[in-house]
Length: 427
Image (tube, rainbow, N blue to C red; front, side, top):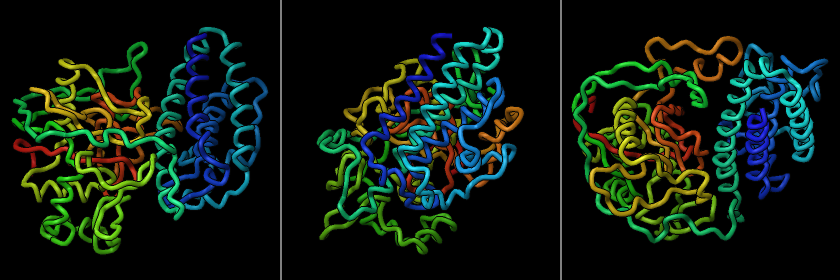
């Protein structure tokens, strides 16, 4: 399968390109328990192929290094014990260069395996390899989110992409308007894993859901609008907040989105392309679900349910296709929405992952994948909220109407934003 080998090389090479601007020291830092060092991401996605492909299919298999099996397992209980996530940053060894050697070894063995397996065996193995591609792409996005947090704490104010102007700076977002949807009995979820049509198990099965008529804002909430929320004491008014959210505001001292700092009365925003004054036309980003919900309450609106979002996204895809500010633009930051387009939703895919009001739960009839790979999604269906749409760091293949991302409601380091809803479901 030449196409499978080519796809493997493309995905693996892209991870290395993303890590290339970083020094070995950059790649070792873990800035908080939720982030991981860049070299750990590079090693873990390699461990995935070694564990779930080579170990089961390579003749006379032996791991590259016995301890790596322990160091780079993330959360797969069925595979065995693992190094604790919150202290991945203390692993000064193996270094970034050694991780590169590990990647090269596994890459050579994977290429040999793909080239030598008979067609029938390789056809059966292809879905696992394809899952490995999508798994690595998810970590490409996480790698960028994590290094953004790492660099934000450095007093030298370094940028990941030196010299690149923030995408959309100086552009406009136009006035916010609303798109109306009739609701009724709709279908959500992926249609199924057809030839060449990948999805994760948490997108299945496709099922029916009733929606009341509702409206969605045609673009994301902007920094300028968020500044109005702040000026109206949005972070000081408990009546706007969920109880858990208000507790986080008090405990962590939130007063603005993450990565914003007040310098002599002017708000600045740290981005992967540098730190600069907050642009009121760009989407407000790096806000938690708690903040998103409080803003919606302040605005007299609510967050959409994931079914509402997906229903609108499918109608949008059918009429306009998928055009988005995703990682392939290499903007590394949300862009301004641009002028309103009659009847369309702006910024639906890309720019910012959009918080919904939906808890991350299984769809009716959901069954996780058999074996250790069943731990990929299903075991996290508790204490998480669903996000939709993708962001400026998301690989293009991970933006589709049915894609379900999820994070805890207090998470602020993901590139997240807010689209308002009205009518229909719960306020």
